[in-house]
Image 1 (tube, rainbow, N blue to C red):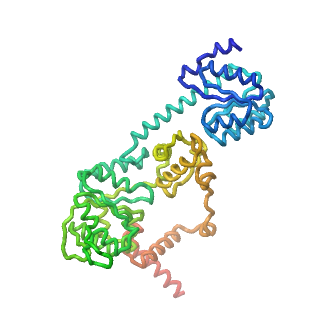
Image 2: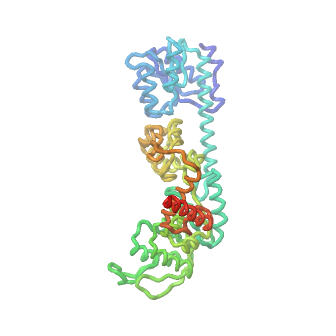
Image 3: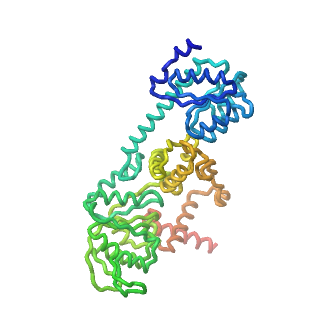
Length: 475
């Protein structure tokens, strides 16, 4: 024993990693021997013969490693392993037994044990295991440092991304920001369109001027006109004083119209005049005022389809979409999810004065397999709540919302899929054309645009269809 201790002395100190370790055994002499051996290796060691005391060490975060005997009165090693990992999924438990069996060792590893050693303790094997752990934790520390550096290099005005889709957004934003022009931001809700809008403003020549935001979906038309253009006293019930609108307030700067696709057609006509003439009129006032604002519009709708359906003015669309930047949903850039996890965890630690080091592998796996219908905003909320709820140094599956704890179940087949029958290609083409015509209320020009074919081709199809129907009627 003494010779073995000398041979292994300071092995872990060479790595600069000290592992706070708790030794649990009902044999006090074994506890003292192992603690002395660990201290000779450069680790901090504390011993106990009470499982509850060892669990308290884990709960208080005073140990990263636990060496536990398997056979103990009151609570065996397997039960202790499960309870320790439930308290802190980031703790490493090494089980030691005098009655080794391969089946038991495999079961222990499956339950989360880091290693399974035999009695009498092979101190060379224990040294190797502790050195491996020290090296593992050192690599994790360096990986966290690299992740922080990567976050710094992949952050673009508060937006995190390294995926090709986001790099394209960043590049287009840099190019557009230098010019005073209208910009349309399209993309699903929660994808970060407002952050892109702020980046456009911050990088623009008018960055020192005001940046005003209006959510068009949250305000009824009567109030929206007043909010955008302002009003004079007495213009309507409740107008007790004259107020400037957002365009006047942000004159010389930038106005973001969020969810512009929700705006009514009459309001769209008034907005078009502002864009064309750079003029506004307060509600209830005949006075025309000139404004110079950079207009950024954001929407989660397909405005081209809205134009074809008659719900959005075509002239306004082309005015707004001088430059269009599409912000991808999170499911289109899964490689950004790990980076965003670290970014939001860092923010949550600062907000809640916590020091959560990261997520367990199973928690990361649960987040990576999720499809994120709520996009970046949903991920931010999940990490924020998990950071607040966790009682350990690592976010585990149990800290996540219930719907993320289990693998997502693929939706059942729809009735149409269940009744699917193979059809000739010409029949599929006919059905599709008829559905598009029905959607466009018989407007053949719009139908041809949606189908991506010339009007002549569409008319030819309709003539063939009518001829076939007449032939069947005559028969």
